[in-house]
Image (cartoon, rainbow, N blue to C red):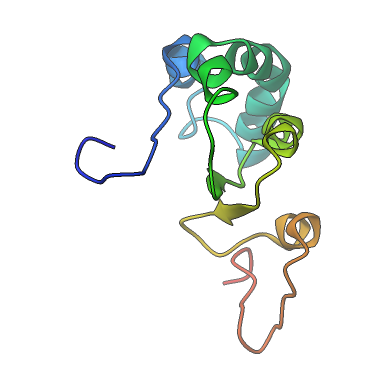
Length: 117
């Protein structure tokens, strides 16, 4: 980070155009938008993992890695290769499947299901 020492923020220009490939969420169902995103992931995961920005991280030493839990499954082997602990970040309440994947217990009395209104 330019403003904080000892923090490395990674921006990958090769995948910056991903949002331009989304279908319009206002004229299409949520499931169609989600499936269009899922269908793009193999291509964009490959681009991201082979990017010079990610490859340069292999040479650095980290104490902890923070990463978004949403659609970043392709980075798990890379983080495992770094041999450092990692933490997920998500700006909303996590979906039950994401909690299960991360080993995060979910107590309905404390963590509401964001799909129920």
